[in-house]
Length: 309
Image (cartoon, rainbow, N blue to C red; front, side, top):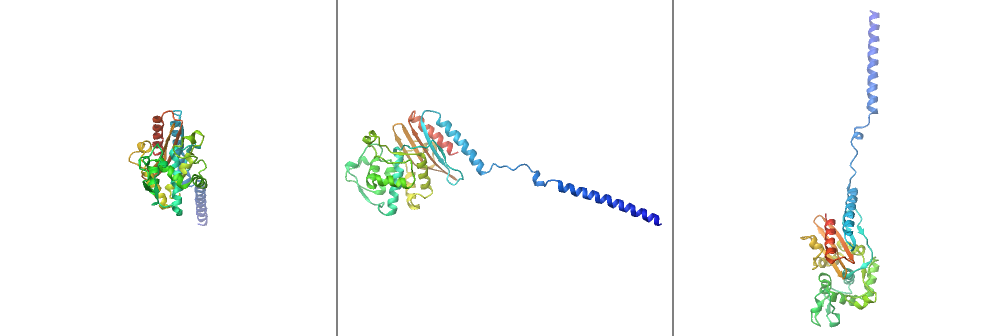
């Protein structure tokens, strides 16, 4: 009997030993096995920043390809306010400004309005000496006609009126305008002559700006960080009433665009703020020594469509 009992105890101990061995073996395998999460495929790192960089690279390739299509020199500024990526800038340098300089004059005047040294209802008398040719309609108004400052500013932008511009230069003073431009950090921009002053051009005095300076100004106006919310809204209203629709508006019809154009012999420029539904595009394109006016504008239209995708 005792012998049988010892045999049963030995068998029980052997079975218990085998069970413990297999339990420890399985437990060690579970510990050695990596967590399930580590076995998942690598995460997709194409987040917003990388996507933005890819989009910027594709845009840069397209802009450079369009720019190399002819002998025209193109300078381009493209920004998307609200998106976490820096502006795309292509060949920005100080260039002849044509009528693009008028946006800086507008901002300088609005600063004076904000300070109280000028007011929008201020009467301005049109004299014969004020009248110049080129773009605009004031040259056809009778001498002695009285305008409000608001009308002078509006015509300078919407009609690119040269007479209105020269009236404003006299009102503000060229030195004061350039002091404002320098104070605000527009380092590529300088007003050196009035509109249609061919003697000044012959003597080497020209007005200059860059797509970088213009892009910065349009960005500040859009964000209402240029003068004040109220005064920036007034500037936006003028820019939205631009009558030259040959370039950006032609490329993007039925789109709200607040912009300014400029033109001289050998160049055509367009720049401003384009409202694209759920996003905003700030774009400035300047040209110099174009191969043909038609080709330059068609290339600019292709550039703005590429930026608006």
